[in-house]
Amino acid sequence: MQGQGSAGAGGSDLVSAAALELDRAERTRVGIQPWSTQGHRLTSEAAWAVAAARDRLRAERGAVHTGYKLGWTSQAMREALGIDRPNFGTLWDYMRVEDGGTLDLARLIHPKVEPELAFLADATLDGPGVTADEVLESGRWAVALEIVDPRWASYDFDWFDNTADGSSAAAYVVGAFRRAPVRPESLRLTMQAGEISREGSGDAAMGSPAEAVAYLVRQLHERGEALRPGLVVLTGGITAPLDLTAGATVRVSSPELGSCHLHCR
Image (cartoon, rainbow, N blue to C red; front, side, top):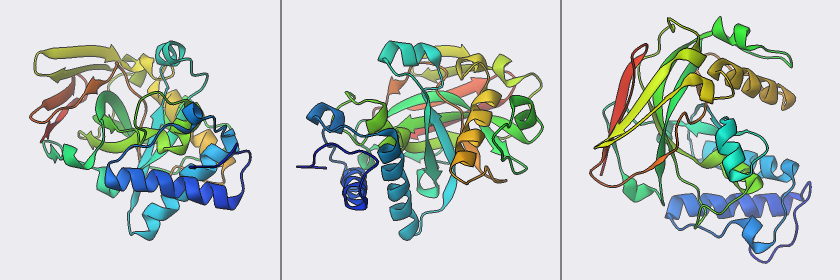
């Protein structure tokens, strides 16, 4: 959006230019200045339109859509950052790291990692009134690590910047999916990286990860979409994130769901 003014519901030229700018930042690993710090004012509609345009660019290159990730589902994090609502982005096959695999930091800008609970849809979820209980009947759970990597030169971005950037989705690893023995809000997680250890529970994600998934389904329905079988949902960070550095090994574990981990180079 270099040289552009405010962006309302947005002309298609502005949306396309913004999507290309973010896409280029991701592919070249050169962050751009957050639009909000340059005086550009995105509307919510324009931010979502840019995110959708970026997804079309990915699909045109042959990337396969594998799911969604929710952002800012933690009320404490929203309050700390002055954010008033969650958002979501899309996940793609090139973002998936196998459990125990290696993440090449050379393809990222300034990545951070968060421990999360992931949901795998076993049945289609759709509709304006989907509830957390319906989610519980329709899929399985796993521990996950999400790597966020804003395509901005700094972390000084707002909700609109982040939404246009697909909620900073960059990479993820998930463990084995299984039926949870307790309600997902009671699931416990520990993230470990060297001597650093952080703990949390599922209720940090919108009170319940199942409610986070239900929220996503309702948002998708407004866009004429549904959560289809086989798609993964990352339900939001359970603890504060950690910076990733070469040589690090990060593990997330749950006494109820097992563990997964990745190495960084």
